[in-house]
Image (cartoon, rainbow, N blue to C red; front, top):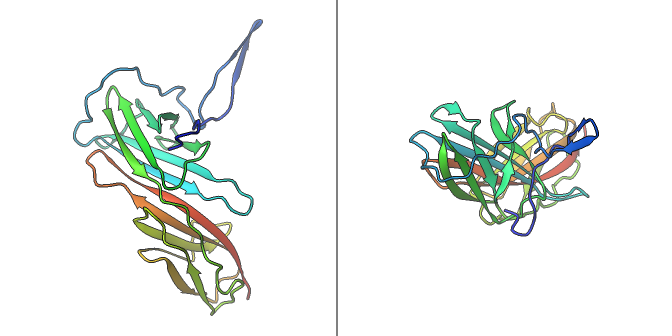
Length: 236
C-alpha cells in the first residue's frame, strides 16, 4: 500500500570480505533462497489451477507500540508450491521462506489502514497477474467491562464499526498462549459477551480483527486484517 513510503522487507546486511575488498549485499527478511527477482518480460496468465493466496495482518498502534504489518503469500502451481516467482505488494519485493514455502515477512514502513494494496506475482512457470486487496480501516475497542473480571462475570467486549470489514474475528486467550484460546469466533456484529469460566485466571489477551475478504477470483484469494489487542486480568 504505502503510496508515500518506501516499503521493503529486510533481514540484515551480510558482508563478505575477500582480500582487501569488502562486498556488502542486501537480503530481505526471511529470504532463504537468495534473490527471488524474476527476469523482466511479459509472461502469459497463470494456467488453470495455479493460484496465489494472501494473508495480511496490520497491528494498530497502541500503548506506545508502533504500527506493524506482516504479509504472507502462497504461490501454487496446481497443488505444488512454486519457489520460482517474484511477489510484490505495492511494487516492493517480498522474500521467500523455504521453511513454509511462502513469500512472507514484516513490511516496513507498515501499510496504511483503509488503503488498497496491489499484489503482483510473476514467474516464468506460474505466469503473471495482479490484483488489489483492501485493508480495513482503523478502529478501537471500548473499555472492557468489567475491567478486572472474576470467574462467573459476564465480560462485555465492544468495538466500533470498521469501514471495508467483511466480518470480525475475536479471541480471548492466556497472554502467553494465544493458540489455545478460551473463546474464539467470528461475528458480523461489533461486540460479544462471554461468561468467564471458573477455570480461567491470570492475564488474558483480547484480540479483535476487522477482516476484509478478497473478491472471488480464479487466481487470487485471501484476507487482510486490522488488529486490536487488549490485556485484562482475571482475578479468582
